[in-house]
Image (cartoon, rainbow, N blue to C red; front, side, top):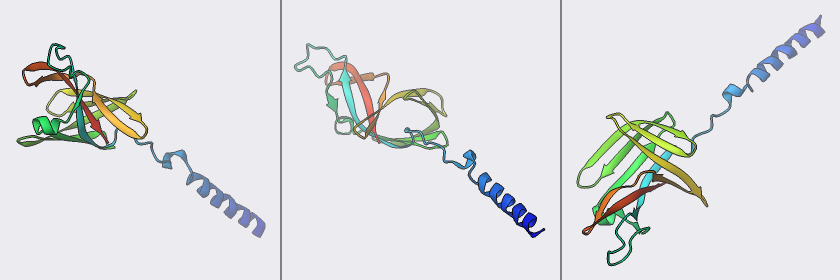
Length: 149
């Protein structure tokens, strides 16, 4: 009878041990988008080539030229907070989606921004998919905003 009792105890302990190793307790993979992203630079494009020097493709420091800085904090619960700093400081929050290296930010107040994620030699970047209008001196062109983690 003792053998059956020991066998039953062994069986119960084995079941408890196996249930502790279920797949549901494995950590969930974190999206590469999660983390703090800081504005790094702007890439100029669409400026007329008749300007004194061709600035297309040049990287500029937006803080130096515009006193503009920004961070985007992306959280694992699919929410984010973006902080803008220029003359004033402002926050914008919302939810995000990351699919096929494309990050889409959906703001609580309406509107979206889309970024392309890339990683080269451990440098992670988010680049706006649609450059915005930008004036440099008297020339008008576009700037693509780049964030780094």
